[in-house]
Image 1 (cartoon, rainbow, N blue to C red):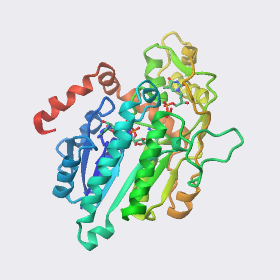
Image 2 (image 1 turned 90 degrees about the horizontal axis):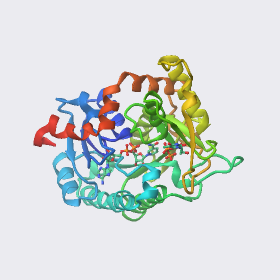
Image 3 (image 1 turned 180 degrees about the horizontal axis):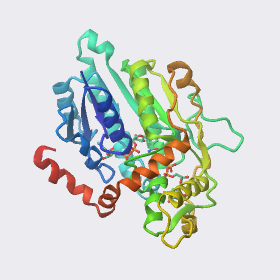
Image 4 (image 1 turned 45 degrees about the vertical axis):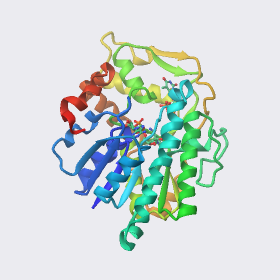
Amino acid sequence: MTILVTGGAGFIGSNFVLDWLALSNETVVNVDKLTYAGNLQNLASLQGNAHHVFVQGDIGDGALLARLLAQHQPRAVLNFAAESHVDRSISGPGEFIQTNIVGTFGLLEAVRAYWGGLDAEPKKAFRFLHVSTDEVYGSLGQADPAFSETKRYEPNSPYSASKAASDHLVRAYHHTYGLPVLTTNCSNNYGPFHFPEKLIPLIIVNAQAGKPLPVYGDGQQIRDWLYVKDHCSAIRRVLEVGALGETYNVGGWNEKPNLDIVHTVCALLDELKPRADGKPYKAQITYVTDRPGHDRRYAIDASKIEKELGWKPAETFETGIRKTVLWYLDNPQWVANVQSGGYRDWVSQQYGDQA
Ligand code: NAD
Ligand code: TYD
């Protein structure tokens, strides 16, 4: 048996592929364009593992996807590939439209053709799982209930609007063509291999480099944080037992204001790797201009996946954030390669012309 994963060299995708192959021998075909966010060093431990087939490619490349689907006959396709950083979507939305909307459309077309040609049994068993975000639901007021699956979509950034559009396409392919789809809408993830443009890894990396810790606006925006491996376990659960056409919100009931997150990371670093001058890392906090259109609060109501699929996160925020900070402290070479851009040479160094 085989699954095909897109975006498996990114933050969540690489964690998913690593966990999948640690838990099973089912082959993963991993299609990733290797944008700035794709890093094959995340998957270095899979070198020589015949159950990991990496292919550099674009989800919008219909001919490539058709060939890979025909060749590998996957029982499922999981779509992680996306442009994912809100700030980049504000300074340059084009790539977000291209990959998240047009790319997802191309992928859906290729999958629809493949699925349509399957024999009855594999056709019935096939799944297309689309990995999405809570940001499609928009911003909550302080007193609003957490996002449930029935919350109206109100995306506010080019990123969340492009993800919302992709969710709608996935929904439409189920409704119109009967494609057996599943969608997950997860809250903010954190953990190993998180690119240090996002809040938590940026704070860990900048703190140690003696750089400012940029906090947007008043730092009181709220996000709902989930350890990445818990997101991966939720995706596995939805893939195996999720009801066709359904969406599942994924979260860990961990709402925190950004400033609390920054303080927590600083306190862990004070404990684990104190500054040479004995001062606390929080002294490096710098308030900077707020993000335009910055969503104030996200919160996930995860009751559906908990009750219907029996999923629960394994980590609390306290255990997950400690693991995360320790991972960054233990992997300075990964950080250095990301910062120098050296990770981008990894493909040619390690894979020659095989990838
Ligand atoms: P990421 O930016 O770290 O990784 C994205 C990966 O997709 C990269 O490896 C990149 O090379 C690849 N990619 C980009 N465009 C591509 C294309 N056209 N074709 C093939 N590959 C392409 O993102 P992430 O944080 O790992 O997020 C993965 C998915 O999970 C995204 O769909 C994102 O919307 C969703 N999500 C992320 C979070 C979060 O907190 N990071 C939360 C909920 C949902
Ligand atoms: P981010 O990690 O970019 O995720 P998202 O925007 O998808 O939620 O940002 C998390 C929160 O942290 C968000 O409210 C913006 C804020 N933030 C900062 O305050 N400073 C920063 O340097 C960054 C990158 C984000």
